[in-house]
Image (cartoon, rainbow, N blue to C red; front, side):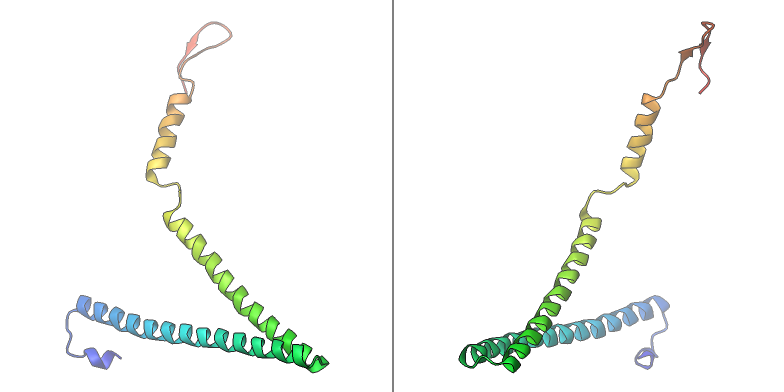
Length: 131
């Protein structure tokens, strides 16, 4: 991969080209994996449909076992998709959700100063200003 960029002398340009190449490869891989997953779901749905028809036409132990295996595989796929959605939603909440940043921390410390006791009389009646 680095042989492609032998003529590049500037390290910043080289770094940008490497990042670009990595992005290309990772996008290609992700698209291929998503396509395979869609095909797998489609195949299992078709197999489930035909297996249900077989069970209704000729209810046998083998047909029902095959149907159960397909249902378990189908549920596993959608459980995996649900876990991905949960992780994505947590990341989105973290990125866009409310979090303690510098503004909120400064506001909190400012309010703490305003709400603290600055002067108090002791039991002898003397005014104390030492925090």
